[in-house]
Image (cartoon, rainbow, N blue to C red; front, top):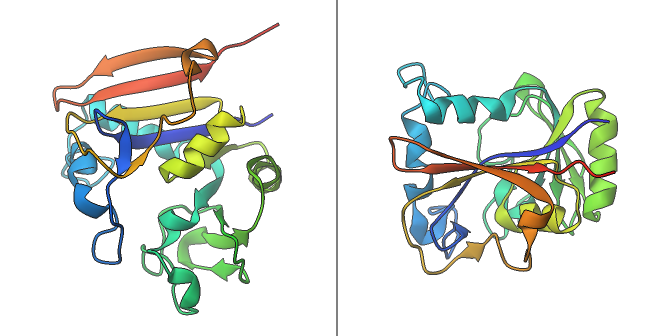
Length: 211
């Protein structure tokens, strides 16, 4: 069976994966771009970037993925459901290149974009959404693309096989936390920490094999 993976999810020292308030002008609220600066210097982000530790982790994001699941707040700012012309943050050619399932309580018809991405809008529980995405992905893996609420829901439901977090040395104080309700997560995962010269720490959670 295909794996369910999370990659490059940046969190602050106090566990927030986005700031507040989120808006069209500030997708990550008061956090701005600080959670993601580690990625901007990598070759994954652009051809002039480096090939160091950060790039090696970032590149895994795109390897072997056949479908993505994301939350409504990743697809657009608050209120995008009221705008029938909203087509996502990424322009006519989104970077996913696969079927991409947006979880929302207000579904709309599929949106086919350039480059192989088609957005499908689902009102579904995590397990049901994953079943749909796995069927579309075939033998490839499914990526849970965020934001933090969606990742937390899938982890809490026991549906995530590999979880890659990037702990950034900043304190946000408010926003959306990843860890709430995930007590004793370490019981279910083997955890590896790798420090980077950029100052971030890559945390890799791999579900333990039982039985």
